[in-house]
Amino acid sequence: MDHFKDKVAIVTGGASGIGQALCEELGRRGAAGVVVADVNVEGAHEVAAAITAVGGRAQAAELDVTQAEAVQALVEQTASQHGRLDLMFNNAGISTWGEMRDMTLDHWQRIVDVNLWGVIYGTMSAYGVMVGQGFGHIVNTASSAGLAPSPFATAYVTTKHGVVGLSTTLRVEGVGLGVKVSVVCPGFIRTGIGDAMEFVTQLEGGTKEFVAAAIPKMMEPDDCARVILRGVERNKAIITVTGLARVAWWLNRLNPGLMLRLSLKMVSDTRAMRVES
Ligand code: NAI
Image 1 (cartoon, rainbow, N blue to C red):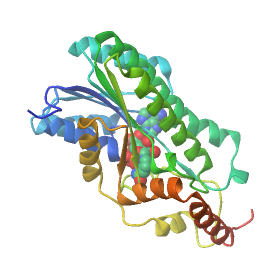
Image 2 (cartoon, helix red, strand yellow; image 1 turned 180 degrees about the vertical axis):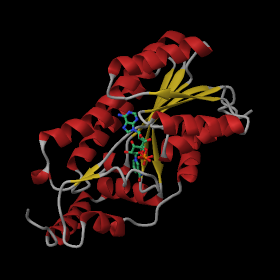
Image 3 (cartoon, protein in one colour; image 1 turned 90 degrees about the vertical axis):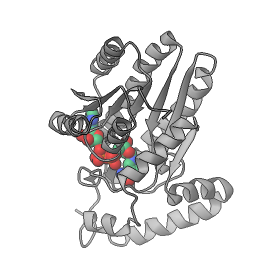
C-alpha cells in the first residue's frame, strides 16, 4: 500500500511551487486530507479544487505562518476534524538577495518571521499534537543554503541553517515519542520564489537579470515533490534535492577551504558590478 494513502497532511505555502507540487502528489497518492495552507487563499483554493477535481481529498485554508495562534488553530482544527495529523510540511518561505550592508532590520524581520518563526510555530503546534497521539512526521523545508555558506543571501542562509538545526535536533528528541522529523534541502527548483524575491543590492544590467542568469538548470517542482516524499517514506534526516545541493553539502564538509575560495571569487566578481546608490 502507498505510504501516503489515507494520511492527513498540512502543507504550508501550498498554493505555489514546491508546496503545490507536494499537495498534488499527496492527493494523487490517496491522502485522506490535504490541507493546502497559504497566505494566498485564492491560490490555495485553486490547488485544492484541482486535487478534488481528479478524485483527491483536499481543502484550502487561509494561513499566515507568521501568526502563531493561527498556525496552532489550523493544526488543532485539522487534527480534530480527521482524528489525527500524520504529516506537517512547514514549507512556506520567502527570499532576499543582496549584500548585508544594504539590508535593513526590516528586511531581516520579514524573512526571519516567515522562514524561521513560521517553521517554529508549525513545528511546535504539530509536535504537541503528534506527541499526544504518539505518531506523526514533521517535514521542514530548509535549502542547500542551510548546509553551506551562500554569499549575498546572509539572512536567508541564517533562517535555513536555523531550520536545519531545529529539525536535526528535534529528530533526536522525537525518538521514543513516536514523532519523526526530516528537513528538506533543495538546490534550484523552478517555482515562483524568484518573482517574490527582494533585491537589496543593485548591479549593472539589473540585479534580477544577473541572478536569473547565474542560476543553473532548475528541477521541476513535481520531480522535487517526488524526491521529498521518497525521503519522507524512508524517514531520512536530511532530504537533499538536486545534484547541486548534494555537491554543496559534501564540498562544505570535505573541503571547506575550496568552498571558501569559490565563494570569495563569486563575491569579488559580483561586487565588481555593484551600482552605488
Ligand atoms: P514559491 O514562492 O513558489 O511558494 C512559496 C509559497 O509560500 C507561496 O504560495 C506563498 O504565498 C507562500 N507564503 C509566503 N509567505 C507566507 C506566509 N507568511 N504564510 C503562508 N504562506 C506564505 O516558492 P518555493 O520555491 O516553492 O518555496 C517553498 C520553500 O522551498 C521555501 O521555504 C523556499 O525557501 C524553499 N526552497 C526553494 C528553492 C527553490 O529553488 N525554489 C530552493 C531551496 C529552498
